[in-house]
Image (cartoon, rainbow, N blue to C red; front, side, top):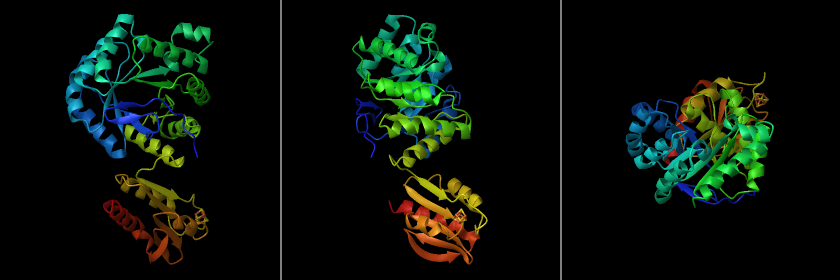
Length: 354
Ligand code: SF4
């Protein structure tokens, strides 16, 4: 049982973050925000994949212009990602975004931070202080001899202080680096210093496989220690994949489940059908199912019946064909070529029962 760090609770467009609230999954669009139709299409795909908060980069005047339409039509609460321009933050707030991500230290003047806070405060729009090891200021890098955990924490505390001095406490914090060990250490250190909720992620983690592995390590270690309130897996891949990996991390730790988990054996010479091909086809075809469902695809009777008994649906290879299990009970043997359509049909029936 994981003992969770009890962070202060905030709310982003109806999604509660911190305290004992469910750990939410978020992602970021990679379309041109200015192209609101393409961005909205991606947000809808993210929502289907299980995303709960969507972030969009606010990098151009065109992006700012597209924002009201996106806010109006988005099925998910929107967070605007601001880098240096305080006017973009003000514009985003006026357009109705539910959250902001910025580094107060990147805004050049104190009055600019104040202007943003004055717009965010009455709207109860939280601000994520997003510290990134790749963009720490030179003084921090010099003082701490590089982008260490200590440098990230000191930078976060400084940025948090700028907001607190203005009486603003709807804060969420992230400390991202591509170094898993330093990232984990940074969050652990900051957890001892502040009570704000944490957004977890490993930045620039890489393409699908490397990114998923590094994210699962970093985010998984922290969540298993009770640290973290919302997660974003960063992959150089379609953002829907980030969401899928995010859910796999949460379900792997027994924290939250959503959609179908396809359990498949690694296969060996004993396999009675092509486990890999069938498992991949099932993952693809069952991606739209929202109800938590465990589907096992096992090559033979060595480990198959054991997995089948603890799964909602299962197919186990036998010399006569695929033995089908429903809710742990043997149902019938079907030809292996019917395995995918049969399990898809049964999974859809499970979804309809909800
Ligand atoms: S379940 Fe059977 S086929 Fe699959 S890895 Fe184990 S022994 Fe091999």
